[in-house]
Length: 224
Length: 224
DNA sequence: CATAAATGCTACTCTAGAGTATAAACATAG
DNA sequence: CTATGTTTATACTCTAGAGTAGCATTTATG
Image 1: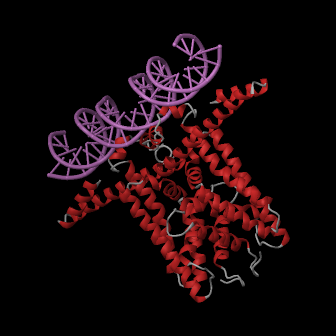
Image 2: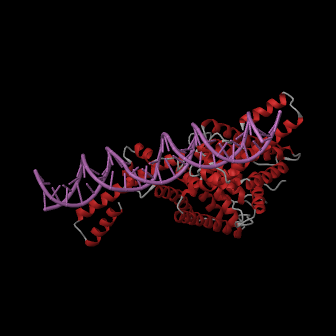
Image 3: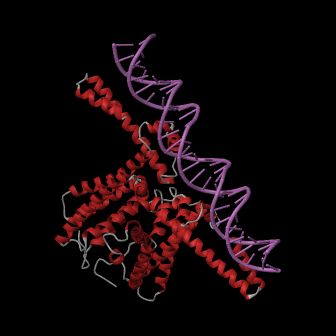
């Protein structure tokens, strides 16, 4: 599909008739859809059996296609893993950034952050879990990119904690270190939550909010 | 070495001469030592590359022995994984039980629990991390045993939180659920701590104590 | 409807690693 | 110093799965 993408670009540049461009665009959408479906099923198997133990034949079978089909949409198995890990961390980061864009005090923002990120993690549990478990299987270059995203996440969270510390809303000795505990608590949800299990997603999200609020709350009393 | 163990038992039962028993005992110790060394190196590779991606040939090479040597001490690769996971969770559970045996208020006990378990997790990071990551690779029967140990851990921790709740030392809405957050926070240490990294083991342990204390602390003010 | 382009499948190759049959080396007892 | 048992290595087998070459099928276009 790299070829297809190139063709589309060229068509646009050359200002081909509208219909052709429309058709090319539709093709792109179909290609993107196929890639997404492959990723979904792959993440399902990676989640259940692990990356190494999953065969692309089984993924293909689940999709009612064949292995070469997958290879025409992804370079190799490693690229699949990279996209899954990337999705897992990128979704969390986007949720964080959106939550931070909401106006409010540090306490209000933190509450929204935890709520949204926790929800995203539960909704995309497979991607997040595979990211946490299989990071070690990534190519060095891919691993670096993923680590950078994670670092951005922790840094932005630390900045929020620092803001709350300066306004006196939070009591944290060391914002960067506390951020790691908070992001760890959020990650833990993916490893532990089980759909249809003992506790509902809403209960887990509410718990997460409470826990994080307590972690940053001044000893003297409650805020936010 | 199962055979060897049997022989020793029989020697004891039959009251063989002292020397023979002493020799048999020494053999047992050597066998146990070899098993431990194999486990150490295997956990090293499982930690670095993952269970599936690790070859027993590489483990053997590291020990300057051969693959059949390993197979004469372990039934198969899965048994190695089971013993590693078992060690990871059992050590944490033992640390918890020892800490609970110390007399004191719920707050004092909780502090000791977190301190000791956190230390054990850092000291045995490989075993704990492999357990958290590779649980899915265990045979169903083995997985069940490991889950039972984990459940015991969470249950005992929940009992402590409940005790503190009844004495008014802790403010927790739901002890069993809070226990899972606390044990998650402790597990997170294994996944995140890096020896020689940005923060020392002592800093991490102290942080963990602070975080857990805040998580259970009544909104009105500090205890313990 | 013919032809070209794209899409997908059949049927492989090749490597790698789990597990083993068997023989060598070593120790121990008599 | 020979016989017996124990420990370890050599040298395999066999399976399984990643990745591919080339053929078949479908779809779009003039």
